[in-house]
Image (cartoon, rainbow over all chains, first blue to last red; front, side, top):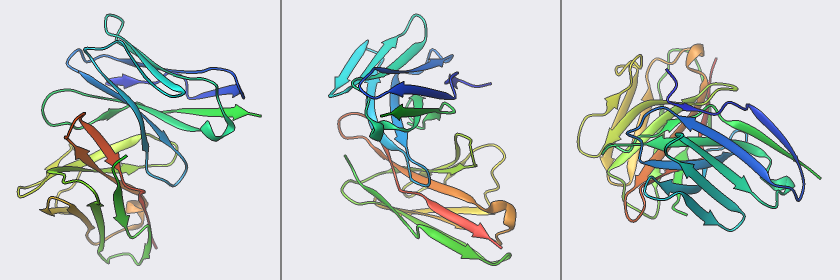
Length: 112
Length: 116
């Protein structure tokens, strides 16, 4: 049973436009959510996070929105740049251990 | 952000040999580190949670005698793939849990293992 779902395996966006990556989760115990960016043959790079006490967190071009009632979060990238092309993983955690549950990722392609 | 290193970045070995991969948190102490494996075109799969000074916790289906984990210090965890076989060929990634401030995992660059 997949606790963290990224239903779109890929997304293509024009440079300068907004990229919206979506993530759904099923476990109501999750209280911390993160987005990672990953290039091929490299480890994931932490982008931005949000705790369950907030509904929005912004860092430069990246904004994460959390809708707890819908168990949904999204990552907005604006404006999108070709260098943003990568696989984006949504991850969630809850409890004391801190291990992350990852979605399967969404491959973002930003076209010049 | 915090820095986590892995060594080696790439290793090729013969079937039946053992391979050790090191994971270091360079600018923070990590009582908890994680080891992941990534298959092509799939998500990261958590293999085990490594806790400093205690035994690792393995996920279901991961052989603890095959994937030996040692977390000897607050900045170093090692994964040893014992008697490696071609099916162990994969991309192994570690992460370290940074608990100062926000609770965030920082990942190493990964190790590509190819078993011939």
